[in-house]
Image 1 (cartoon, helix red, strand yellow):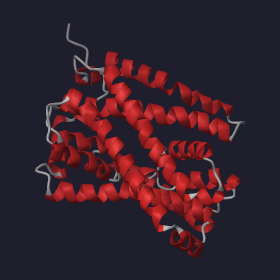
Image 2 (tube, rainbow, N blue to C red):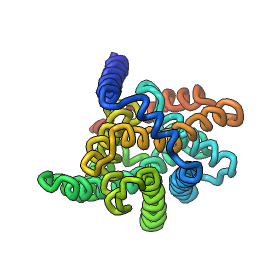
Image 3 (cartoon, helix red, strand yellow):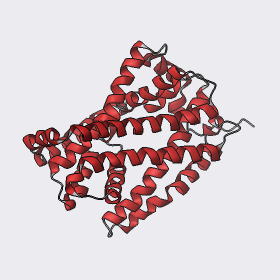
Image 4 (tube, rainbow, N blue to C red):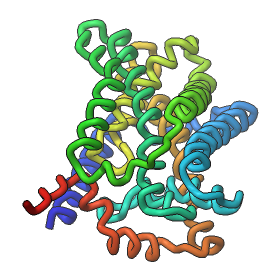
Length: 309
């Protein structure tokens, strides 16, 4: 029942957001914007998208190399791209963490690898989101609280580790510093590619790269609200609101966001579908059965029962 209600809620919110965007955007102007993009710019945006996807993959697989058994290049590619597929699946699915089950290892290693990867990447995004929101809207000074996100995440990590069953999923030896340096470096490169995609598409509006960076982190932060499918609707709405003061029409703001989302998420997700169904020995149903059998995701953070006296 909870899964059904969650699904219906996300469908309703996504539909409402799209309805709001539709009344803000002129379809003919949107198509005119797409037709006006020079081929060279489109190729550059595609290339930057590939850099973004690659940086995310290297970041994730570096952590996997440190914490999991050896795996092949084929397994690595299938695992990474399938993660985009899982990201777009319904709430009833196992989510993006399912990509780790396409690599060899124990459930313990898989769960922790996924969490340590998103720990640093999420922290960076919310750190810059807080600064960007404040720079764009000075009255929202309280958004600077997001700059302390790492302290909050670390506190939550320690809380889970000391008081829940999560401590059984933490490997004995974790090279935190090495993973942090590589993760943060590749995440920053990934965001630079993402920002540059927007900057190229919006060059006719003379928006500086630094200003575009502020807008992009604001878009990413708002798009992280988990109330629609993959942030759809929230991200486009944030782009429309944030870019309006710079003279960017709604059609261009929304159109740019949708185009970049298609290149950076939909294309690798579709590739992941093909790889998962035709080239991977492990299928989605196998991953779901493994997780269901181990009950890892459902009981990961439950408190451990007190030992009998």
